[in-house]
Amino acid sequence: MTDPMTDLPADVPALALELSFEDFYRAEYPALVAVATALVGTVESAEDLTQDTMVKSLMRWGKVRQLERPGGWAHRVLLNACTSWWRRRRTEANHLARQRRVEPSVAGPSPDAMAFWGAVRLLPERHRMVMVLHYAGDRSVAEVASILSVPEGTVRSDLTRARAALATQLGA
Image (cartoon, rainbow, N blue to C red):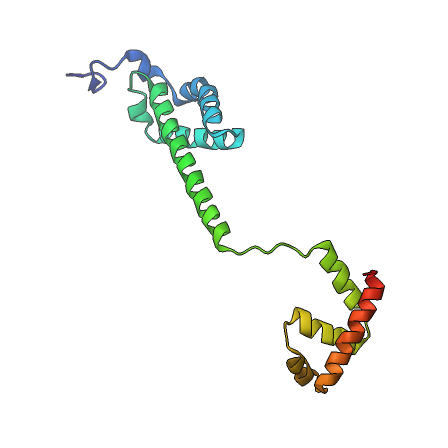
């Protein structure tokens, strides 16, 4: 049954009709932020979720203010928003975890490797090239000879001299 004066259901409390959105906002905002902060963990996210809840309340204010407990409705909307927030974070974390597993990771060079290659860079040019192609490039003596256009015996000789120089330089 409706009240002919207000065209509203007769069981709607008269006080609810007098409640302005401004009063509702002032009364409910602090509690909503506190609940959201406890649920999501950051004040910034909690305030964003609370503002979204208040916008939904304002958009439906004609119906919300008729409720027996408009604050209860706003809290339910906020709880749903927090649940969605956590669901998005969980999906994002799962996606990032999958991405990390797919991408190969390589440990950086050890200090010994850094010292070795630093010493190689101090060798004369051809000895340096022979060492780099043979060890870092994983090329055979024949391949190094072909790349540098020198005989294989020269590559072997350069490797022997470069190793001796490195042994002296690194104190091995």
